[in-house]
Amino acid sequence: MNGEQIKQYMFVIRELTGREIKRKYARSFLGILWSVLNPLLSMTVMSLIFSTMFKRNIENYPIYYLTASILWSLFTGSTNAALTSLVDNKMMLIKVKLPMSIFPLSRCCTALVNFGYSLIAFVVMLLVFRIPPNPYMPLLLLYVAGLFFFSLGLGYMLSDLYTVFGDIKHLYSILLMLWMYMSALFYPVESTTPQMQAIILRNPIYNFISSARKSMLYAQPPNTAEWLRMLCWSAGIYLLGRLVFRKTQSKVLQRI
Amino acid sequence: MSSKGKRKGNTQERKQEIEEKGRAMKEEKQIVIDVSHVSMQFRIAGEAAGSLKEFLIRALKRRSQSRSRILNALDDISFQAREGDVVGIIGTNGSGKSTLLKIISGALEPTGGTVAVDRSKVQLLTLGTGFDMELTAKENIYLNGALIGYSREYIDKKYDDIVAFAELEGFMGERMKNFSSGMVSRLGFAIATMRDTPEILILDEVLSVGDMFFRKKSEQRIQEMIHGGATVLIVTHSMDVILKNCNYAVWIEKGKMQMAGAVREVCEGYRKYQNGRKK
Image (cartoon, rainbow over all chains, first blue to last red; front, top):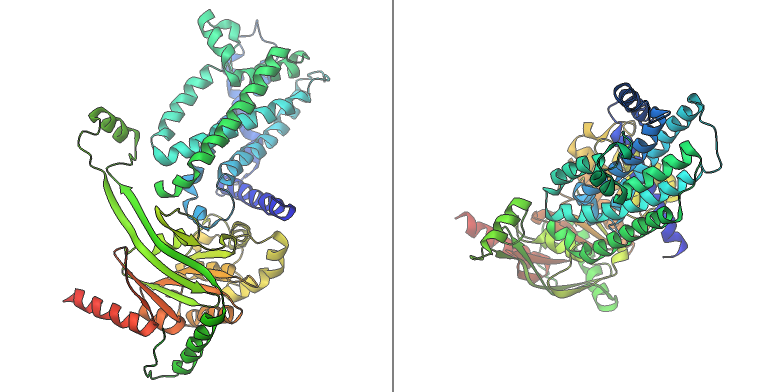
């Protein structure tokens, strides 16, 4: 790709991402503000219900939950949106000259923009709860980058699969529910059985979440094993997704 | 290649001009679209499992009875278009016209044969596709323009022209779901044809819509493009459109090539076929 093509590529991704965001809030009065309010409201609900339950083991439960929940929303937001991206944009696929991968990609970028708004809420909450700043906090951006590529890779595969099996959409939502409980979003991993803990600790998403909690709440960097796991998962799934997508690209239009 | 039958009416002069131009070009201009022995087969219903349930059922049955049906959407289609040609592709619904277009524009890979064309120059215009009805017309111009390869600066520059040509002044802030189908297709046409030199333009049933004034205007725009050296492929089931605009016609029926050649002869054949079907 030359400079001009890259510029055009970026322009298309910006337009598609902008479109998704406008679409998402097309009928709401508060519009994009919901991206800020949503995590805050869900944090309030979860805190009301669970903070008394875990009061003894978790300090700053709302932040503990919010850290995990914004990352989890980034992951589910990207993959869920990417899943239907090829089928939804069927008509555009025929016209567009760019690689088809821009459709899942722009859906994931939309989730990333949403995450950006949630981050505003997150920072405000850090101040409200007087979490002391520490030098490891900026590492959060690295975890986000890793999680983004992990989600993108999975998104590529899902979008492709969805052109073959419409049922994947329903299966995936059930899988996500299971995955959510395996990610220890709103309870400490120690409160589960040893078998569960073993599963949760192997969960790639939990890896990102626990590293983020460590950096934000306990001023610790991830250890080497955690770094490696995050890197391998995000690079591995991303590359696998690209590979699968490239292999099947030519068949997609025949299927939808 | 071209016929010289007498035609009444004031379109005759223009028509002759087009045909002569086309003929002259055929001798000197190079081939820009070369469709050679293109076939397209789709496996339908039987093979491609649309849902997991179907897939599992089929896996359980181990495909004991192969119910896969192969549909020959296109069967051995060949024609060429030279620079400046206006080729009309005619055929009844479901004859494979749109499949052929998708193959030429590169969206589908043919299962047999080849298409030689510079895909970066091809622009496919189908009606109202690629618009997001939840967005405003303005947002759609940028979105659609970006997708078909215009840069932001270029759209900024051409924005007023597009709006004026589509006759949608004052509607640009409206969501497109409130537009009539005529308005949608006008906007689509305006965006797709605003390019300075669209080298290969493919129109899928575009010229047969809109009110009479817009139809005239869009035909005029197509003429301008032809004079600018564009190669145009028009797909339609309206013979009028073909007779008025094209200098070469291809008639496809049930995926097979029935006739190709001079516009009037092909249209005559098509008319006879249609009359035959009615009886």
